[in-house]
Image (cartoon, rainbow, N blue to C red; front, side, top):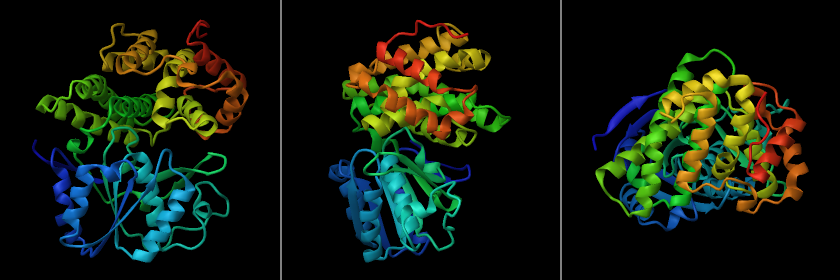
Amino acid sequence: MTLNNYNFPTHVVSGAGARHELTPMLKSHGVTKVLLVTDKGVATLPFFGDIAETLKRDFAVEVYSGIEGNPLISHVTAGTETAKGFGGDAVVAVGGGAAMDVAKCIALMQHHPGQLLDYEDGKPDARPVDQVLPLIIALPTTAGTGSEVGRSAVVSEDATHIKRIIFDPKLLPVHVLMDPELTLGLPATITAWTGMDACSHLSEAFLAPGYHPQCDGIALEGLRLMSQALPKCVTGVMNHETSKTYVDARHDMLNAAMMGAVAFQKGLGAVHSCAHALSTVCDLHHGLANALMIPYVMHFNLRFAEGRMKTMAEAVNAAEKSGPGWVGWLQTMNKMVGIPSSLPEQGIEARHLDALVEVAIHDPCHQTNPGPVTAENFKDIFQQAFAGTMERAAT
C-alpha cells in the first residue's frame, strides 16, 4: 500500500507500514526521550514490542501501559508521575481512544501545575494551558473515536464514572501514523463496537444543526466508506483474512473514524448523551453504547430530520432511500456485525432507567441534537431500547 500524506489540519501519514515513519519523524523534531502510552492489552501485542524495541535503538524510551477499559483520571495521574520522572520530550500514543485521551492529558500535565480537572472545559475558573507540551504523535489501533485528530480528551471520574472533557488546540497531535496493519489483530467485537462508534460520530455530525458544508461533506463520505468497510472488517476477523482487500477495508475504517472526529466539530446529539449515560451508570464500552442506542435515537429524530436521514440512506446505499430506511439500515448493520438489539442482551437492567435518564439529560451532547430532547423523551428512548422495539411512531 502506498503511503499518503495529508493535513486537515493534523499531518497524517496513511497506509500499511506507516508506523515505520515514527523514528525519522521523531528525529526531525530533535527528540531524545520518548514516552510510549498504551493500554494493558496493546502492551502485550507483538507489534507494540517491535515499536518499542525499534525506538530504543535511537532514543531513551519509557512505557506507560496502566490503562484498562474506559479512561480514568487515575490513569492520567499514574501516567503523569511516570512522565515527570522520565522527563521525555515526546509522548507517543499507541492504542484506541482511551490510550490517546490519557496520553493527551499526560502531555498536558507533564509541565502544568495543579490537578487535571483544573483544566476542565467550560469551568469558569479553569487554569490556562500556557506551558510547553511535549510533542504528541498518535498511532491508532482501533477505528472508532478518531481521537488522533481531536483537540479534546474525555476521561471519567474514578468513583462516579462521570465523563469530564479537557479541551485545548494544543492537545491536537502534531502527527498521526494511520497504519491499518496495527488493527488487523482486533477481535470482531471491538471491530464492530468501534466501527459503530465512528458511524455515530459521522451521522450525528451530519444531523447537528447549523451551516457547515465542509463537515457535512466529510460526514457523508465517511459514512460511505464505513458502510462498505465495516462488514468486511468484521467478517475478515472471523475468516482470519490477511488479503489486500481486508487490509484496504481496515484502512478505509481508519479514515472513516478520523473523518467522524473531524466532522463532529459541528456537534453530536442525543445518541452520545445516551451512550455517556450507559458508560457512566453501567460502565459500558462507549462504542457499544453508541451502537445499541443509535437506532432508537434516530427513530426519535425522524420527526426533526427525516430529509437529512434520506441523504444518509443514499450515502450508505440503504435498501430504502428514506428517513425510515436510514433507521432500518442501522438496525441491519448492527445485526450484521453482531451488535445486540436491546439493552438487556448486554446485561443492562431496567432498574437503571432513572439513573440513565438523569445522566443523559444533563449531558451536553444533546444540545446539538437536530431537535430538543426532554427527560421524558430520554425515558421513552431508553424504554424502547430495553424492550428492543420501536413501536411508538415518530411524530
